[in-house]
Image (spheres, rainbow, N blue to C red):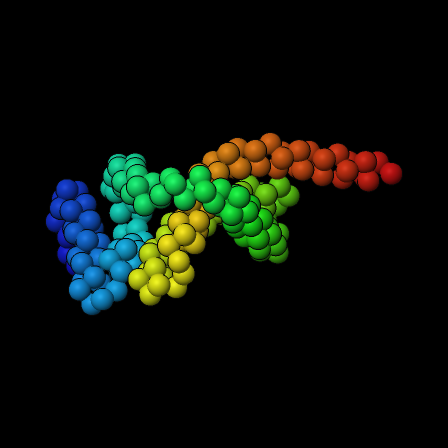
Length: 194
């Protein structure tokens, strides 16, 4: 379908087709009893793996800020402020646990994959939060009453906080990555002199 639309050379038609395709898959997913968000995620994965992924990215990029705003506002509307006030120690502990545990896993994987010195730290900072997909899973688990509404709110708030901390962590990690690279160069320079 994307191939046929791409041959028309109409940028507007291509953009509408991609957005319509994702919306249609989300709708069908909802009709089949699955989460519409899960369907939209699956459609996005399929489109991103197509030969038109670069074109899709360039055409959809102007909508990215709008979609991100809608997403984060909707997540913020799901959080109950009374639960945050009452359970803030649990939320803080969950947020720190998520960042540390996932950060350790990502750091190990990044270093093992051979990223150059310091780059593993930036990668860890970028990926140490729970992602947007965890909110989809959280919503799906709540349909099965997997845990109480308080724990659902704690997980939701800690997810939102961990995602909100990523830009700050990335900014801090850039400075630390530069220090690691410089100290590594200085160490290599001294060992060559000896």
